[in-house]
Image 1 (cartoon, rainbow, N blue to C red):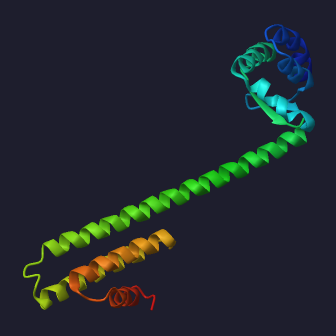
Image 2 (cartoon, rainbow, N blue to C red):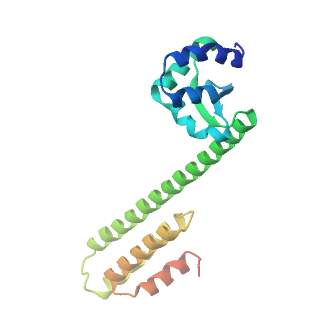
Length: 202
């Protein structure tokens, strides 16, 4: 691959001729090619001139730089404009990128877990309703007692399947306890005690 600085010097006049505007020309004069990293042409601006980066990121100018530098370097490149003009500055940007990706992945994983937990508890909530609907002689206490035993087992199973307990999980858990209470006329606190004991939490 040709020398990056020499390639930039060769294409810069042609790039300038293809664009207009004082801000764009100022940005082109102030920016410095930093490196080519896995097909990314990294161009930096001094920390005092970062506001000029928007000119270089504009579609037409970006495409012009990418086209001419790809031809000069004999390899396709896509432009990235950073704050700073050294390899150390770029390494700092990459570390920041990695941290942003990590935080994004963590947030996505948390969302996935919350959705999974909500879906699981919604399934439990519906299962309780189906089981109650299938009971004959609902007015008889012995029928509700049998349902209570089944319902506690269902909720315990769901409780033990959870890998993490946050506020959303606790709210959904409480919602299922309240539903069992509604169906059986047994206080929800007592039902919670039964479930937590069966789960080994009390």
